[in-house]
Image (tube, rainbow, N blue to C red; front, side):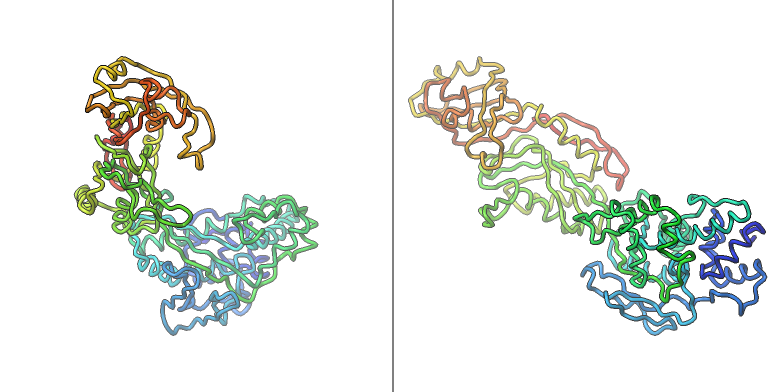
Length: 545
């Protein structure tokens, strides 16, 4: 059943005569159900012709050729400069314009003066197939997708002009048309294309999907349509560092809500002029949202930093905990990059023992995202076999929300350490036994000299909850401590030239130094949902040092 009624006839005739395509006519007539938009272009024209009782030779808009057989699609691997010729030799011809994009030259297509061809060529099956070919060639693993489009901002100006025209004509019949009564171009486009994408790729369209396919359109011929708005509403067009142009869609929409109708009509034609060419496709891009891998690591080396140690551009040590773990994850997940985080950090010469320190790695734009529990176990084993400096346990896929558990309360946790202490004076077992009786000792620590270049100068109060000693010889003993998180253990031992008070040296009236330090990591259990990639629940061994 044709969606327009006798009440719509005058508006449909007006828009058609001024160069508007059938689908945009539906939008201005408030057709808000999907089926009519999905009809093939030729069928739409025929139905509209019957409805308006127009002879074929009187039609302003003719049936377009099939979409161009060659179109420039951005090479996902090589950036914007790549050009991919998707097929060869077809009826539609293409030409390269100055900015390097490809525009079609369909000889007998009159381009819609409102959508600039978006609802003509670019929602037909042939174009969808070309996009899907690019998606399939991208190498991403996905079971659903979200489809997004970016239209030229001047489309909003043209739609506004057409709305003012229709509004004026309807006013003559004592009818009204609100701006919100018009079906949005993006909505209509998705109504048409979403089923086509699902059918072609065999997966559902899901707005919550982590895999996104985006298409960016441009129309160089009409790029100056928006410029008059800047002179009238300069406050709406302020430069932004991350924007190439001030004429963003949001800025244009804001200006259109401010400008008076009479001022708009003086600056822009109503109806808008018909362009010579349809939009161009600047890029088709695929991207996958980040996935997160978490676990715990033990560090057994006293010559390994947690993260790459680089000073003034010079690398000090050849590897790090971060790299020994993430290099394997990058390769297996086929990710572009990563971000490493952990619950605290240890110095390069400090070992991390016990159950290991919690860590998480964000993998950016991964191409592979689905793994069985067995594959994750094998990945963990591969990491562990690659180096004797670290070991990883409890490796698993987790959600972004679960990472918050790792950071929550980091400064409130109690941490355990073991240290080998040296003293300049000869000591006996009885000289260290009093340390065992000290509980919840408050100390004041001025920012240590060794970290003053990267930490603000401040005095921090910390608590030494308990100490336990084990005598070794006349100049050495083992010290086991439980402290508040954030305590500088080395400075508590040697005093840092009096910047930490009291300290082991002042308590024993000796000069003391620390020869070896180990973090003894314990844990408590926190149950969190694993990443939706694998719907289950797992136990993460967060916190509780």
